[in-house]
Image (cartoon, rainbow, N blue to C red):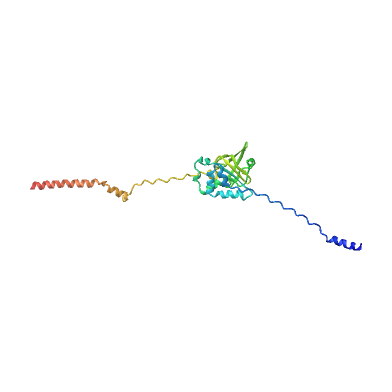
Length: 246
C-alpha cells in the first residue's frame, strides 16, 4: 500500500495530455478568370474599328491591365463600326496621336459598374474616365431603365450589355463619345496648299528673255522713226540732183 501511494503521484505527473488535432486551413478562394478584351471585342459588335484603334495606339494594354491586374476592374463603352462612319467632320483623322488616345481612353471608366449601378451614378454628378476629370468626365442619367451618357459635346445611350461580370463590363453605345475638352474647340481642317502668286516677270528674267526671242518686235520711240523718214527724203533729193547734172 505504501509503495502504491508513493508511486501513483509520480505516474500521474509523467502522463501527458493528448495533443489537439490541428484544424485544416481553408482553401483560398479562386480568383476571377482572366478576360481577354481582344477576343471579347472580336466576336461581339462588330467592334472592329474601335478594336483597331485601341490596338494601334496601345490603349488596349492600359485596358487589359486594369481589367485583370487591379481590384477596381473596368467598364467599357464600345461604339459599333457604323457609329464611326457616321461621324461628322472634323473626324478622328484630324486629331493628333495624343488626342486620339484621349478619345479612346474617354470610352472607359476605371471601375466595374453593373447596369443597376448607373442609376446611382446619375445622382452623384460627372464621373471621371480614364482620360481624366472635368471636361473628360461623363454624366449619366437613367430614364426608365435606359442609361444615357452625356459628354458635354455628344449624347448617346447604352443599347446593349455585351459582357457584365466583375471585374469587366462592356456596353455597346450608339455613338462615338466625343470629349468636350477636344471637340469643344474648333479643330481646323487640314489646310489646302496656297496657290502660287501670279507675278509678272522682270525685264531680265528668263521669261522676259524668252518672250524677246519669240519674235515680238521691240517698241521704238517716235523720234527714231521720224529721223529715219527724214534721212530717206534727203537721200532721194540728192539722187535726183545728181541725175539732172548728168
